[in-house]
Length: 341
Image (cartoon, rainbow, N blue to C red):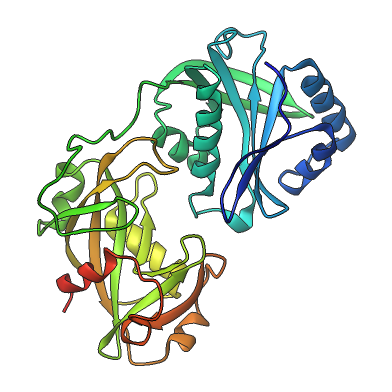
């Protein structure tokens, strides 16, 4: 492996860089090391030997995520020269969690390594690290091959080692082309269909059920949120977490994005999407989502925004009629209004 420094991927908001020795002190922004000097020494040695490569996710010049890659290991279950690498120290700054940025970093690193010829990847995860396990499973790390224990700077960790091969892509689309659909956006995502089915049967009958959305009415209009990362107005919602029901998911998301802790969430039905390749997957795939509606008391978007908890993602709120034709609105979201009149 030839060490590569500098930017390996970038877009308008983020870039992924391969660390050099000069970047190592910035790792303390993401983790509290018991012995910072030892961390710097051991990582410098590993970088110099080509045993490890460290990838950083940056917002401008701010380090917001890291993922380390081990190319050489004493444990052949972790690495196989030229074929298998071990991914570890996967972290995202607390201010940027819950926005899909961990998945973004993981996908870019796997893409980079795949381009270099690697076909197998391993990760270690503790049983109670639900945030990491959720991401790993989404990427196909579903085969536990070993139970391991290690110590680092005086702390002990017991964890499972998971294996993924690049030809085991999750959620590959079973409908690569769709002729009849409700709506399509400029990114190539297709809103295929909407079905009204018993809320209690969703999880059993639709897979993968990955997210929930809410159409929010206020002042006889529809309330939208400006997503900083996607630079457009959208309805509210997000990805489901492990063992979460759709109703629990939408309540959590609306608490974060609208400050709503109480209210009558009206279940509307199930959405079916054909999603274009993105940072979650390199392939088209079918995904399902549950749709809800909620009506807020009359008020102003500014008043509601004062209670928003996730202001890092949701930068402002507006009523649909006030921004229609003036601001960018998610193409598909306008169609969702039809299901909550």
